[in-house]
Amino acid sequence: MPKIDYGFLKNNIFMRSTILVLFALCLNVFDILGQNQITFKNPIEIVLNKNYSKELKEGSKIVISRIVGQRGTDGFISFSYIGSDSLGAEYYLKESLVKNAIYPLNPSVEQVWEIGLIKNKVYEELLLNGYRFDIRKELNQEATSFIKLLSERDQFFNDAYLEDYLYRILNKIHKGYLTDGRPGNISIRVIKDATPNAMALPNGCIILTTGLISCMNSESQLIGIIAHEVAHFVNDHHILSYLKEQARQKRAEFWTGVVAGLAVATDAYLASNNRNYSFGVLSNTAIVAATLISEAVVKRMGINYSHDQEFSADMLGKNILNSLSLEEYAMAGALQLLKKHNYFSGDYSAIVGGESHPSIENRIYALGGYYSDTVSSKKYDAEISFVNTYNAANLFYIKSDFMAALNLINRNITAKTGSAEDFLIKSRLIMRLGDTRESNVEALDLLNTSRQLMTEPSFWLEKDEALIQLRLNEKVKSVSCLNRYHESLKGELPNSKQSINFDYLDFLRKEISWTVDMIKKIESL
Image (cartoon, rainbow, N blue to C red; front, side):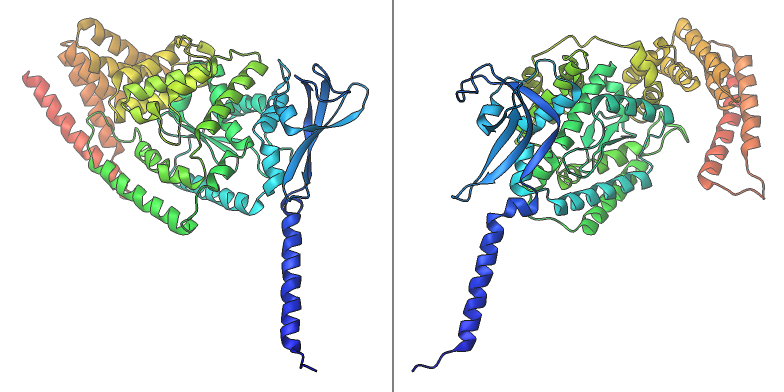
């Protein structure tokens, strides 16, 4: 009788058992990773567009309320939608039948999102591959790192009224959280950057730039843009884009690299000189924002969307406008404004698109083509006036884009929300753009309006007035202004008990020297 190798037999049995367990896990992977059905928070009534069975014929109305995933004997998962007719009879409908059915012509906002989840197969993806909580956790940490970096670099435009206004808009678009078991809620933040841009982070935070808000001419256009970004989050586009990447740099290593690149960019900025810049007006936020919102950062968080994802988000934005009884063409209008800005700023790559991103032109035509972009709204400009002021200052002092800055200031003044800073900037702009008696008188009037609107007297305006009076050949008045300016500057010098800001101290000394020299110069003119 041959000797039995019990060790081999034991190992063989263990190996076979392991294989069977793994096979069982594979057969039920969609049950383990996720669940086998999802119930809709907002059931949708569809109309069948072809005969399906004796009971379900073309024109039949069915209210679908959930989707079920079932694994066949061949190992493949098929999906069925469960719905009921007006009598309460329940039916299992094939995926293709539901996809090609006729949906409500005037759906509510909630139904727009539900229909989008069905048509874009988001529910099917969740049932097939699970909720991927591990990936969602990692992407959420990436978003948290990004937001932390923005905060540390003072990139957020913090204004209580603007924040409230944007959340009022967001509440019209979406209830703010997902109802199908996925984590995350929708929030909204604004960063200080005059370049129009918007993105949805994987944790549901919608990032808008101040430039994007000012680039829009109406609330409807802004709603379209925000709805577009919400669509990316709701439809899990960041998850799908993330899965395209095979290799991932470690999080700490990646964000350390971003900070290092940011330091180089900031040094380059500080080494430059802009003759329109005056001390304390703006920080280097523009160059910081440009560095932070880089291609690497965008790709890192799965925000490099495909053509289909962009077109889908655009259409959902349009559908949301329609469900709110707003101008559905506002979505295309918003893209037209972005295209115009990119054209005049020389950013042609954003216009023509690329391998993974459709051109703005194609997106506009997919939405129905071009519309008049002359629409404007004083009410909208009144709502965003503080943003317009910030962007105008950035365009004037940093970018030397005088006409763009003047346009934003005029929007505020026309909306009757012009601030002291608006009138001061416009006065300085008029000085840059002309030198006639009429323009100089206008600049002086604007300066006086600014002075009247200020809550506290500002001695800085004495310098502006001195230059205007000199243009008007009022030398005595000009010298009088400079004398007052000189005394105020000396009053700003710190005493021995005060903490010293050496940059500001250096600035004051230079201004005092310039003022003394200027008074002598005028007396000799």
